[in-house]
Length: 411
Image (cartoon, rainbow, N blue to C red; front, side):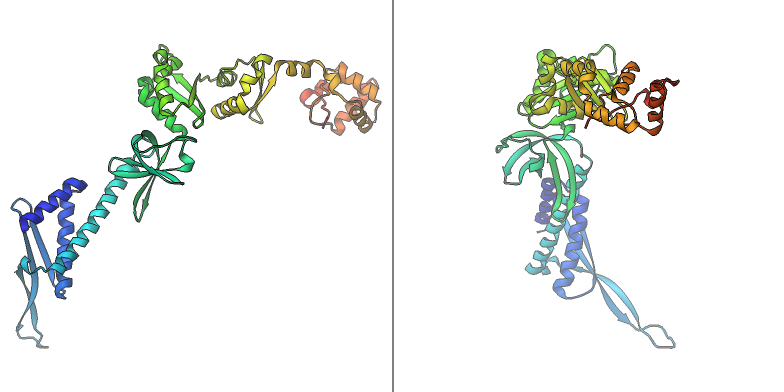
């Protein structure tokens, strides 16, 4: 019986990948507890399991009362002696109890092992196999562990058929009472980075760095790359010979288009690159608002914006700038015809506020080169006084005013 018992432990050790020392400690504790419970005693029980000699021995410490030496209170001294227990006495109920405790500990050891294995792998990409799905999640096996792919982390429209092998990003590992819960993602932007590391040696080795990723899962992504070696073209390295490298990633993501753009320290050049395949002619920045107006040739405007605004949206995510796209004709018209933008009534309202004739106000503003078609009104009493002085032949110019101009509210 002892040999069969040792065989069972060794099989558990191999199948469950649980250290033999941990199993032996668990079994010894379980047998001791089961023995005390079965016999209704509170004795100290020691279990010796020797896998090499294939033996299992149990010992119990039982009290033996002996007269103590002469003392004032005539107490007795209790001495314990260890007796070997015949394991054949271990009845069916006790054996069943021991088995339950062992299996519980095995399950706990498996959960601990799986948690320790995956908690340090958050952020990795692994290959899993689809097992089943329901309305809320897809169940994917990662070796001996089953993980979940929630709806929010699934690529829209992806089928996830039984036995499909897919690459997934380990998003989170949670320690629950039912064991570790491994949460996967197919939509996380870092999945793109890890796939490039797998397909492009230069990215894996750090020669080419992925600076930023913007993604609309299942539809399109933009990846900004930079080379730390002047001999290596970052875009060419990521695309590969005849597009083989990037195509492998596109295939893995079920046809998601990937634009690889060149990163540039110059924000203007970076924005132009981020808006590719459209070609834009000018970028005007507003540092305070961290926004930019991008001027595109008329025939490039729709391409720059993209279908339902996708191209400009991804470019904004990629670069971190808020982008407003204008056509070249719109921009030229706005800059070349300021008078047409100034509505007489509103000029009149400003003139009335300043206490001057509107005709005189328009003339002096135009002579000083002031923009009277802006969308904010910054007229202060001091500016008003300056205008009055200029209109009556006083000294000074509008350039001396804050920002060098007076602006009129057209809203």
